[in-house]
Length: 640
Image (cartoon, rainbow, N blue to C red; front, top):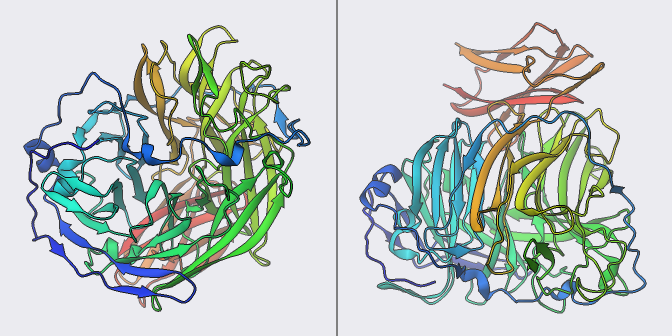
């Protein structure tokens, strides 16, 4: 997807090109300083100076097609595997599910690339969506803040729009991070001998403002396809469908301040079950709610399926990952395995021709064999929690590819796992496979947990067996009051598909669900759908009503409100509408996840007030949390 560059990007500081500082460690990990650094002019200005290109009418494969065509891990079928799903939810939920609150027609690729790889996040004031080749910024009411703009306006002459862009909103620093990779070769007048990962970090909380641009160059044998990111206290973590299996951690603290010496640590990862080669991507946990304490290991997850052959069993696998920025070292270790209820992740032997659509059989890749993006991590009072999901085949006759005597019905296996804060051990708290018995395929899922403990689940849909269900997007969810392992909300429609899509077998690749940091309860999702046969994207938001002792509370009912203000050396904290089921914990954390102060008081249904002496605290951004076992709210507080 190379093209001639016709623009240049002005900067408010000269581009810096460094001889990369490198450190090679005995365990195989290595550290490198960023290769280039610069600061942009405001994004709104760059977008105005370099208007978006006219959308093309042709469909072109995105540049990350360098990834292996077959997913070798699911290439063969084990006839002795347990194929009857042990956690199947075959009936949809029945609780009232409101229509989306905000409904936005998202971007298509200005250059016609497929898949779109749509992803995005909700921030304190805006929603930022990225797709292959362009990005856009929306106000929370759905209006456009910054129209679709080519990535070259941001990354300039160091990119040829090679794809897989990802949007991160770092709620703990109130900053935006936008990433894209650049393949090796010539890009206009610029030539790079190795692949480059580009990361733009906003200098303020305005996604249309200025950015620190970082260009990271790993070893030339470390091509990074399908990058997936997470936020942790000590870095931005990245996994990928890598040329050589690895975990990469970027120096978050320096990047947030615009330090041109920021670097990254690469940790070779030798635990992949995909020993035969092919497509595979593990996933690290992504801190939501509040950061883990600085220095806590992150956790990398994937699953095993007994369909993969002798020696495999149905289970979740957890590795711990740690970095030390003082010594510039990184390491990982096998941590736990969690046996699961039986499931079947086999579709068509890695052909990527798994999901039918009306008018075209075997149209889409089920994205099987690995955990879907993201794994949100939440800290609660007495435990930590994470939610994750991936597609499975719930057909009762899955022993051969669709059209060859077998059948495929895709559903979504999901989990909530919990970690005991004393033993640090994880366990499966609940698991389920959402697959109502209606012959509709549900795949390409994304999951998140709100600050009431409710779980939202979004996914793509398509079917030729139930009426005419063109590729679209739907969602469901559950509250903490529901029976374990079930999605209780009636299925909602985020985007109704229309028309047969005539494109490659790749669909989605990225879909993304995040929770509004301003209220802690509004889910935002972006995904692909068919718009009269054209590839399109949708952005929408929804809420899950909180549960009460008498049933479901209406969404419009008063929700918990948390506020704080500084008065001299005191921080005055006020919470409204707390459940009066007992005590409430009030905590202050710094932006690295360290607990600074804590108080426990009796909750009041009207107003609960707590004051903290902050005379000894340095100026900066802190986070205040109020919570109990069944709820929490987190707000950002500047202390001067």
